Amino acid sequence: MKTLDLDAIKAFVLTAELQSFTRAAQALDSTQSAVSLKLRRLEQQLGRRLLERTPRQVRLSAEGAAFLEAARELIGAHERAIASFEVEQRRLVIGISHQLVSAELPGMLRRMSDHDPNLLIELRAAGSVEIADAYDEGKLDAALVLQPGDKRRNGDKLYDETFAWIAAADWQPRTGQPLPLSTQGASCSIRNAAVRTLDLAGIPWTEVFIGKGAAMVGAAAAAGLAIAVLPRRSAPPHTVDVGASLSLPELPTHEVVLYSALHDRRSRAALGTLAAAFKSLA
Image (cartoon, rainbow, N blue to C red; front, side, top):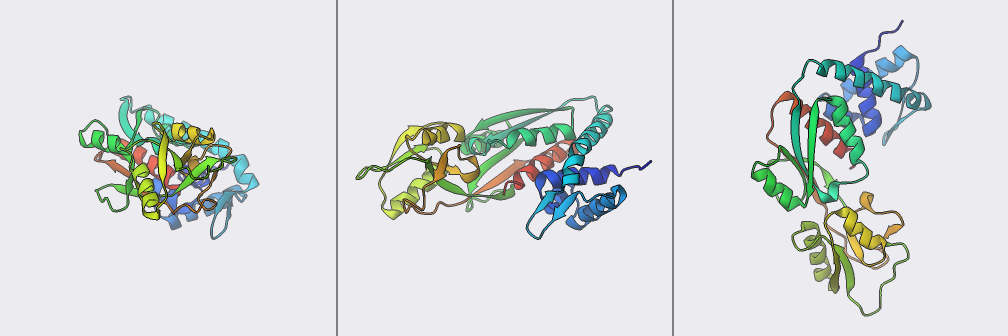
C-alpha cells in the first residue's frame, strides 16, 4: 500500500488551481524548485504524469484531472483534522474593491476555507478609496484595492490590472455625440484615469450611467447604454473591447495591492492563500 506525501499533494492541488509552480510556491512559502521536485516525486510514486509542463503554461494531464478532486478531498480532510484542535473560531474582516469581485471569487473563498475550516470570513466590498480609508481607520484586518502605480504605500503588490473600453457587441457610436460612459462616479480612480486619457486625446465624453461595482457598470455596457472601463476578465458576456475600433486611447494599468498588519500564523496563512489566488489572475 502506497503512503502519499500530503505536502506533495497540497503542492499538486495549488499548482493545478493556480496553473503556476511559482504561484503555488508563494502560497506554500516555498520555492519553485522545491515544489517542482515534490511533484516529480509524487508522479513517480503514483506512476502517473499529473501535469503537462511547457515554458509558458502548466496544465493538468488527463490523469491529473482524474486525481484532482480526490486530492482536494484528502487535503481538506487533513486540514479539518488539524483544525479540530483549534476550536477557537478566527474572524477575518477583509475589504475588497468592487472592481475585483468577479466569477473567480467563490473559488478563492473555498481555498481559504479548505485551508482553515474554523476561519470566519467577513467580506466587505466598496470602492478602493472607501476600502483604504476603512483599513486606515482600523475597521478591516486586510484590504485588497486597486491603486495607480505612482501611489506607493507599504502593501503587497499582487499584479497589474489592465483595463479596456467595454461595450455591447452590437453597440454603435452616434455621429457627433460625446462618448457615453458607464462609471462608478467621480470618487473612482479608474473612472478619473479614463476620462483624463479622453481629455488628453481631445475626445468628448459624458456620463450616462453611474453605479457601484463592476457588475452594475458592466450591466449598463451590456445593455447597450454606454461604454464601461473594466478589467478584460470582468467583461460581461456578449460585450467586446471597442478601444481599437473607435481609436480610443490606451488605458493606464492599476496595481492590485493587499494591505494587512496581521502577523499571527492563521491569518497570514489565509491571506497568503488569497494573495496567491489573485496573482493567478495576472
